[in-house]
Structures are given as C-alpha cells and as structure tokens.
Image (cartoon, rainbow, N blue to C red):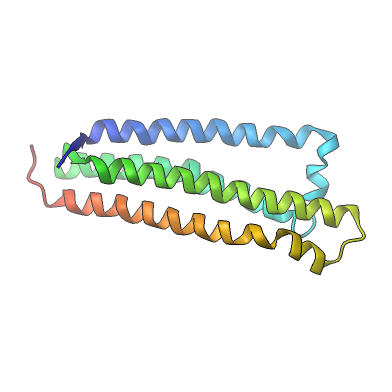
Length: 166
C-alpha cells in the first residue's frame, strides 16, 4: 500500500481551505456590480439558491476542509499515526473539492438564471421550474460524490486508528 504522511495530507487540506477562502471572497465580488442585480435577484425564488449555494460553499468548502485538517491532526497527535493510505487520501480530497465546486456552481446557476427570469417578470413558476429543472439532478450527483469522498476519508481515518504508533 502506498502511503502519504499525515503531515503532508493535513497541509493539503489547509491549502485547500485557503484556496476555498479566497474563492469565497472572489464569489462575493460580483455583488457590487450593479448590472448583475445580485441583491435584487437574491430576494426572490429561485434567486435565493445563490444565497444558499454561497453558505454551502462557506460551510462545506471552507470550514469542511479546515475540519478535515483538524481531524487528521488530532488523529496524528492522539494515536501517533504518521502515515495513511495515499489512494484513499488523495481520492477523498479530490472528490470532496470537485463535488463542492460542482454543487455550488450548479446551485448558483439555478439561482441566477431562475432569479433573472423571475425578476424580469412575465415568467411564471412553471416556466422557471422547467428552465432550471435540468440543473437539479447534477446538484444531487455532486452531493452523492461529496458523500463518497467523505466516506473514503472516514474509512482512511478508521483504518489508521488500528495502526501502532511509528
């Protein structure tokens, strides 16, 4: 089994936390562009999906990766585990990051397109739902991918708890 040091994996998650925090700031910047009318679109359904997507990104993307770094550091310090399975670790972090960005991007797109249609007027809920409907399935798939990534990460942690300290 190829392995990776826990210290390196913790650093990867901390790097991803910083990247995600910078991305969260970048995602906020368009709110100040008046032509995009974000503050107005955020107040009506389905524009509220943009608001939800942003907070999902903050909670899962930023705090989630920080949480993984803290958990792995606690496992390393408490149980003396210095190495873990490389495949599980890298697959977990990649699946988690891809899923977070995909899910929040699709949710944002649903909110922006739906909010634009609703804000423009003349489009009823049935039309808006018809337009945004095809984007809902990829959101569910992204959440499923995130769950798989999380389970792989947890499996990696549980498998390492049985190791003797090195």
